[in-house]
Image (tube, rainbow, N blue to C red; front, top):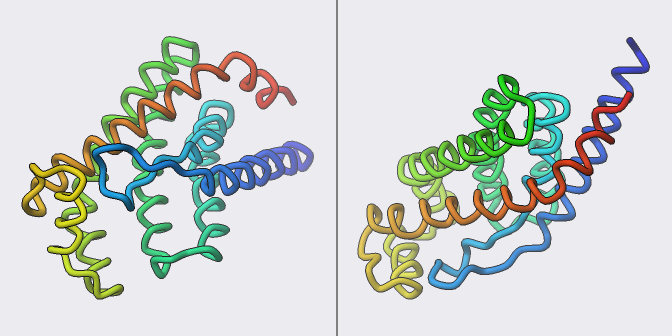
Length: 195
């Protein structure tokens, strides 16, 4: 039992470190506000969720964001947002995959996770995260909206910012992460499941 716990913690630690490194490799997406950048740092958390369950994935997500706080430019708000949105992706993903742990189950789980991530990212940004940026960083919402309208002229207020920037960004992120996951699924999962 003790040996199993040590292996579990080592896998989570290694995947957390990989996720942290991947978080530094981010790319802007055309037609999106400049501060919304795509990274694939959820990939190790997804692999942890598939191989060890949702708690393992959430722990990887937590480790990644705690380690990234050392490099924060947002007083930790960005890391908090990343953790909450990542968790919103991982929990339904783990729930669906636990019921069907095969390739088709992985596809369905990734789809469920992406839809959940889009929904919760939109809700959290509208009610919590963007107001928190405004309060803590003194970054007015109208400036955030103007950054959005610079990338997409149809963005004119907070609601259109959420609808035309936050939701599509998370859909794209979910799709990209899903493709990467499915490309490595059959190679990596057996290694992590092995005792």
